[in-house]
Image (tube, rainbow, N blue to C red; front, side, top):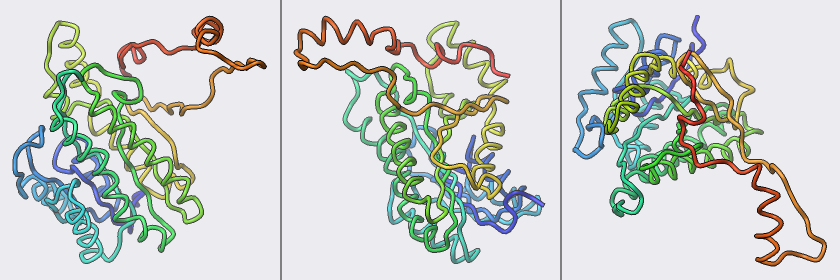
Amino acid sequence: MGVLDGKVVLVTGGANGIGKECAVLAAREGAKVVVNDLGGGAGGGDAGSAGPAEEVAAEIRKAGGEAVSNSDSVSSRKGVAHMIEQAMDTYKGLHSIISPAGILRDKMFHKMSDEEWDIVIDVHLNGSYNVCRAAINHFREQEEGSFVLFTSTSGLIGNVGQANYAAAKMGIVGLSRIIAMEGLAKNVRSNVIAPFAWSRLIATIPIKDEASARRVERMKNHMRADQVAQLAVSLASPVTKDVSGQIFVARGNEIFLMSQPRPVRGLARLEGWTPQTIAEHAMPALKPSFHDLGATTSVFGWEPV
């Protein structure tokens, strides 16, 4: 018996990395899986191919599971509608969507082109909207459904050269939160995962110094996609039916629950504030509670377990 017995799961970006591991594990846990992948390169710049998704589906079937492939793009609303239709036509249902599909276009913000901004927003944020919007009414009507979306510490904490990616990933956090709040009465859940894992996307990040080379090597060896998949599949299944609206980090064998924005400290001035008194009084009082401008490595500064 698996945690997804009798369930139908759609996995986007399912041909490689985290997506592939989620698809394979979901099938192993009893799900019927629609493996979606555009089949393009890590940068998302080519036309794509149906082959990669079908290879994963065939691997699942060879192992005794049930799976079909789909090569539509998450950035296409028509394509996403087809994914949902395929799940319903093939398996007569859909219960969970795990959606790690994505691309990178890293560039310092002052050098970033409109195209580099637009395509990352389109695939990540609009792609997440598309899959959720296409399935939400079905989930509400059957009073069961789980979205597992993917954010990034590049958004939650920050990373130089990833303004487009960070903005998209923080948008996904807000999207997931509202879906969870609005879905509470209908048993529709949504959670997000910020993964640490070696993938084709990570492989595209340039190595500029010895420290970054060590960091990448550590990620390859100690932070694997299959470890992230364990959390994703659990959140997609009924065994976590009371978990919704949360932000998790999966890092090797570590799982973290991340904080969400709440007031940290407040000040009031009975006579009101002026720009000058804010600078002289409010900012010095609040400054000890400021967050620094360190990147992800300044927060997760220890070796993964």
